[in-house]
Length: 315
Ligand code: CP
Image (cartoon, rainbow, N blue to C red; front, side):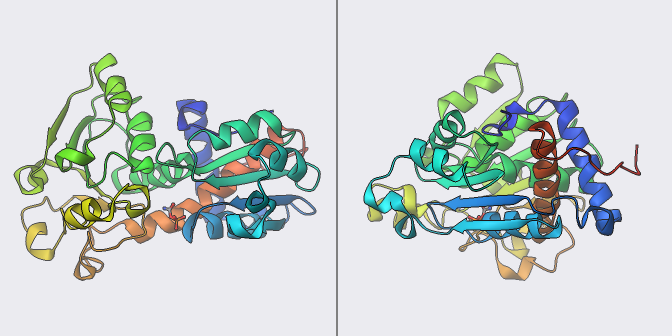
C-alpha cells in the first residue's frame, strides 16, 4: 500500500505530475468536483493544526468526498493509551485514506505499517512534513518557474523545523541549488539533514546573521521558533525573537526575492510585509490545498480505490 511518509517517497517525476494535476485543478475545479464521491478521508491530528488539517479537509470536500476527523489527542482513545498501530488498524475499517499528525517522530511510519489504507504524514514531531513541502514546491514553481539554480535561505528554528528538513531533502534533488542556513547556534540544522548536503556535494553555508546574506537570496524561507519542542521556557524566551523580518530589512533584499513561511507566524515576519509583492506565505496556504487534492487522488488511484482519474488538460 503506497503511503507518503517522507517527501523522498515521491520521485521528481511524480512531483512534476502532482504539480501538473494541481495546476489542472486550479484551471478547472469543476472537473474534479465529484471524483471522490463516497470516499472518506480520516484526519487524525494528535497535535494542533490550522492549515494542514483544514486544507486536507477542504481538499477532500472539493473532490466530492467526506471527512472523519480527530482534531486532538484528548478527543480520541489515544488519551486512554491506545497505540498508533491499533488506531491505524481501526481507522482502516472506516476510511479510505488517513492524514495523520503526531508529536512523535516516526508515528506516521508506524501507522502506515499497520494500516490497510494509504497514510499521509501530516507532520511527525520535529522530523518531517512532506505535504507542507508539496505546498512549498508548487509555490516555488509558480513564483520562479524552476527548481534549479536557486539560492535558498532558510532562517530561524532549523533544528526543530520539520518543514525545513523536508524542503532541504526535496530541493537537494535538483541541479545548481545552494543553501544558506541562518539560525542561532542552538537551532542549527541537525547533522542527519546536513549529511545529505555533504554526500551530494551541494554547496551550503551556515550563519547567524540574516542581514549579511539577505541580498544574495532567491528564496527566504522564514520559520517560527518551535516553543512546543523546547525542554525549558528560558531557552525559548531567549531565542524566540532571534529574527524579525521588517520592511527596513527587506530594502536590502532583491526585487525578485520570494519570502516564504510555512505558518503559523508568531513574530518573525512583520505584518507590514504582507502587502509586499515578494511575500508568498499566504499563496503557500492556498497551494497546499491543491497539492493535497492532487496527492489524495494519486494515492487513492494507486490503492485501487479510485478506478479512473480525470484527464489532465495540460501536458
Ligand atoms: N504549516 C503548518 O503545518 O501549519 P499548521 O500547523 O497550522 O497545520
